[in-house]
Amino acid sequence: MIRLNMIVEGPTEQEFVSRVLAPHLAKYEVQLARPACVVFSRKGSQIRSRGGLRRYAVAKDHLVRWLKQERAPDVFFTTMFDLYGLPDDFPAYDEASRLVDRYARVRKMEDEFAADVGDGRFLPYFQLHEFEAILFSQPEVFGEYFLDCEKEVGDLGHILHEFGNPELIDDGENTSPSHRILRLLPNYQKRTAGPQLANAIGLSLIRDKCRHFNEWLTKLEQLGVRS
Image (tube, rainbow, N blue to C red; front, side):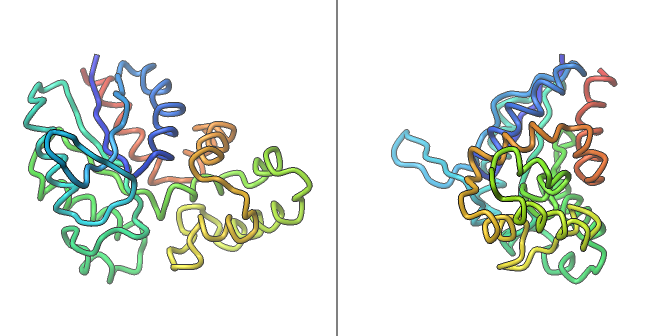
């Protein structure tokens, strides 16, 4: 069985990966370990970590050390980082940001990240534009968790209709997917509600609506198939 290690930004992604992705990938003979958050600081022998990326060098250092610790050819590594709010010291950040096509932009970022790390077992992934984008795959599901909010849930549906694609909802400071959700549903709790909503929507529909996410998950599934 292939082993897959993953670095994520925070506890929301940790919960989503553990609850939704891990059981799915197990069907493809890919064992996904509990995802780790990026480590930001050390104090003595104690390692402290928290969600959110701040510097590329820290993320790369965490990843490279992990790659060196586990050198087996059947151990692979990936990331789940939001493109929104990504530190501008990531490889090719400026060049990629000038690309109008959002899919070309995110693929450029991933390709340069992989090249900079320089290990064929590393399959980087950036979420377009952040985790909450996948929740727009089926906005109606919000109605099951936020009662008496028919208008607000309907407005989420209008947002999806406007963009036509959850992954293309823009990454403006006040108009990113999470900001749009919070403006309509202030009680939305990212860490708890986010993974629950994603689980309720289901991977099949998320993959159908979010092609970049689907491409990544397909690569992870193929790790087990080719073994």
